[in-house]
View 1 (cartoon, rainbow, N blue to C red):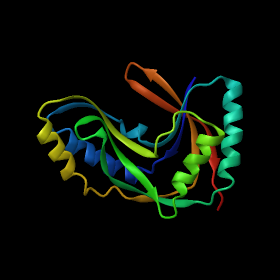
View 2 (cartoon, rainbow, N blue to C red):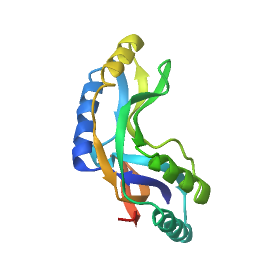
View 3 (cartoon, rainbow, N blue to C red):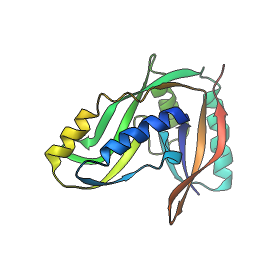
Length: 179
């Protein structure tokens, strides 16, 4: 099964991300917006895992999370990835006051692996851009959008199932952070 490690996002943050997506949909571009129910913070893409590897990964994730206290994260201004001159993805970077989010991500990278990018919340994937200067300007106007902050209390091992209607994400395992 196709798996990844993520942090779930509260409904109030999903609603704010949806408002940003609504503004993005007005720009002269064709993009695939992340469905509200699928909004999450990505920590690592693991690829295909069998049942045994899922159990092993769950155990390692538990041991990693047992070393971290709950911490607060906030969404930073929307980013054009890889760059404003060639935009493929729009995402919010995620930061924490004492860099806990990056330390957690580094531990996952070292002990579990997968394709690890800086923690981020994907807003959409760009398929085609009409008027690039208008799109870049419109995105820059949204850089001040405040999506908010929340306390991270768990990390999830997720399964991605591709369906005709789009991807469906299913939580396989939840690892709790320490109080």
